Length: 159
Image (tube, rainbow, N blue to C red; front, side):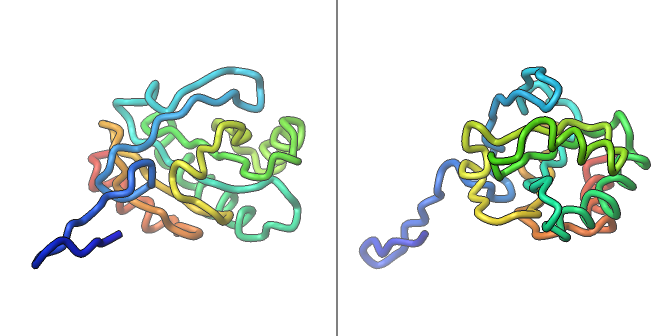
């Protein structure tokens, strides 16, 4: 947002949005297995956040999970943390766990019960971010982030 201020411009950074270079908004959620976690507990390794739904009709979510995030997990394993966040609350933890089993994806899945998507400025599905080891957003928001782009960002972070 830009506001006119005299002869210059005052740049107003909207707090609580997922802008590259800004501190990633911290959050605490309960994962699909009933465990509580916070984004900040993963400081020290990059985190890939994926805002999605487990709904059968979301083809981009399926493609991202299967063709981009799963290979990323296979390549980087415990050096990164992937968190998939269910944006549509009509889908349950059982739905998330079924989705997880379908795609063989062992990372964290959680329902967005506290408005995480809103704090990142996300209003649509299949949006990804990469948060660096210090908790700053280095990539995103990106619709259906491709595997090659995610790898490139992780390599710049020294992973």
